[in-house]
Amino acid sequence: MLETIGTDLHIHALPGIDDGSRNIEESKAIITKHYQSGMRRIITTPHIRSDLFLNNKASIQAAFDTLAKDSAIEWPELELSFAAEYYADDHFVELLDRDEILPLFGPYVLVETSMRLEQPLFTSILRRMIDKRWKPVLAHPERYRPWWDHKTIYDEVYEMEVIFQVNLLSLAGKYGPKQQEVAETLIEKQKIKAIGSDLHRISQYDDLHRATQNPYYDQLIELPLLNRNELG
Image (cartoon, rainbow, N blue to C red):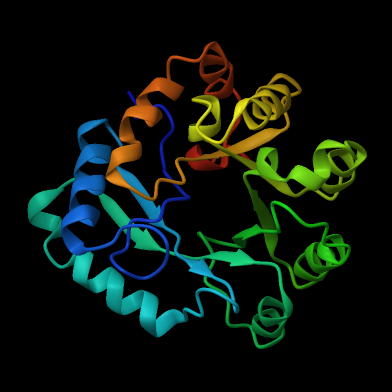
């Protein structure tokens, strides 16, 4: 069912490290569900955010090692790795300046901003990333409430060649009808270039499958996607 996506590049499946999986048992259950659904490449992306989840490479590596130590036995065909989902704050800028970034792969870096408050410096942080030769992958643009009434921000950010990553859970209406509507509009306008599950709990898996029944999912998987290395 999910094999056509290629890679899940946004998922909170490392145990006990952020607001995602709470323990190793839940982490393994999430990965097993993905594997059974046809997913063969998963990039785990715990939060790095100074006011909530002050993770670093060492803490992420430790959680990843706990999950991955038996992966060759439990999921023999799975390519499992880790990166981070960065909140665009002052701490992230410091990490940029110190070249201490955990990319998805190559130059691609998963980044988010506030879903409720306007962040006037966000576009300047994106430009700073680009100046440093990183390629921003914007997590769930459909969820940013301040953007809904200022729709030109979508065009402005997209024209910076920022990659828009939609959450599959948005297509299931998991976050609300407006988030689903915006996600579908971005798909219809062919502005989505990456897909993530953004799973945090095993209990969300039914919603993930429901998302694949949305007619916009069929449009989505026909687009050129970073998940399948189709962006050149």
